[in-house]
Length: 570
Image (tube, rainbow, N blue to C red):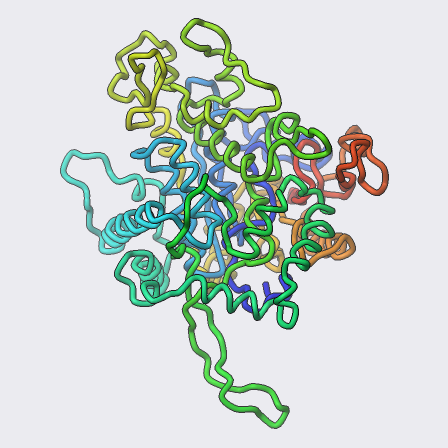
């Protein structure tokens, strides 16, 4: 990672640099677009469709955006809208234990239905991307950390923390820790304890001082001119790559203070403990005959995450309704990446509650007087998604009161539909269909990929930009014939210009071919570009948007950051 980020202290990766994917859907699109590529056959369903029991391996994807998106949209791939969602399994491998633990915590924030959806969306993004937190959010992290320590500790001990005849804790039903070794289990428990209020390292951690030291090390002699560097990075890298929807004000806020997702006029006095961890380093105690620093290898506690790229790409640069999300006015985006991130997280959370996409729900349901839920076409509907009543969708009839105990909303005296402390049966069924297995950071090739029972076990493998060196013939052995390899590109990495991004894609293609994968051919029916822009990427209104990349592995209808490859049949 330091070689790709040009930051020697960037060791941990807490967010990805590509949009979130519905893995089931993109696998289906790859098989349809792949033409002559052999698909996995199944006697009972369309061979272009993924298997009902879908299994995916995530390698270095850094955050649970793919898990959340695929789970939220799982009912779209079921046999019928009213049927239970098909089973989805994810195996998650990261390079450090703290990154694995973040997957668990962020999913717990979304799975916990004791706070309103709007609050959940805000706190998820706050924990996801902010270096410091509000006091209330910090308390939420501590409560969830204590719950994780209790439940996961009981699982490791072979005990149960649930009362007789009670529903098992959702953490125990969703997450599988059985593949972790004892050392990795101890490290995971240490991370959960460090997020609590009594950890010595976290208690005495000064977030402002530590971040300032990181920035001074990064900028060096140019520290006093860092705002000029930030401005250059934004306009010559981020905006030029097509992420101009990220507002310059928000980007500068992240680079200077670490606040990527502001919440109204709130202050953020507490350190985000989920971004802290140990990194291995060498002390500078003496110099050898080559004048190189030599010393002891030590583990140092601190913040070793990203301070340059930002967490906006995963949820803030793509949307199902791009015409609405990326509308322009007076040469400016009407909405920024923060607002689009809130909308995307809210729409996925809504779909886990309702079982149907927001667009379909809003067309079928209306206001109290029967009128449709009409808003300005260019306005985002985040507030409507969070406040919408979804209880009647459980039974399909608003007058049916048989599921009243599961109702997630109620009708207030003024006729408005309000959330009332639970997300209903659909929400519980959605998360019950998910299984997330953690794979420890150590001995991945021989300890996991090399096991005979993993042979041809996965329909898809998603590899992050920081882990493309993992694309080897050993990795290919765990993919089913006709399975799909998805690799993350470097398009939005600020350290990579256009030439470096192209070279990165070519190297990834070479690794995939060597491993036995074939790039999905570019769809000739897709227009040369999504819209008529000049070679410079300038629109008629003066805004910039580069042409869509035409490269093997780019799939129609999906972002051009990921590359898609299909494993050849035996």
